[in-house]
Image 1: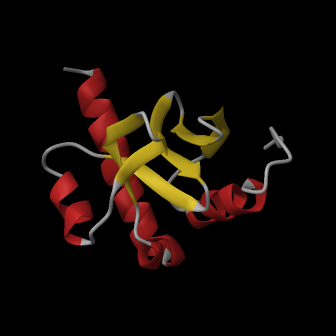
Image 2: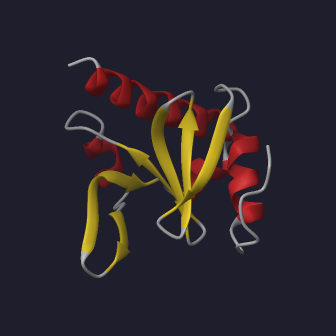
Image 3: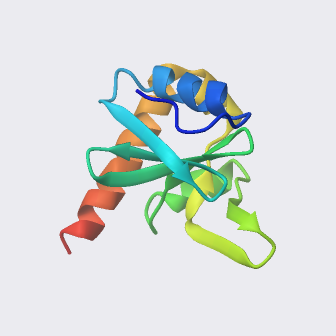
Length: 114
């Protein structure tokens, strides 16, 4: 995977992708001053400012809220209310992160086919 920037999150986004190796081939590209996470053409997550955010829907969002996660807010005027922060404890445990990523991927795929 080619590095896209020399941004300080380069090592972190690569760590996240390493944590997701059991999920599928995850690629990333620059966006919002961070990185978008993709599985194929499905944009399912973000890495921004040392944090990971995954796509949610009405059924998956309560899990994030139970961890007191916040939606992605790249600046004071913009909030993406369908992308919520993945708790650090989950990011550190590859098996759990893969499970949460699979759910985010399913949310994206379901939305694309409805």
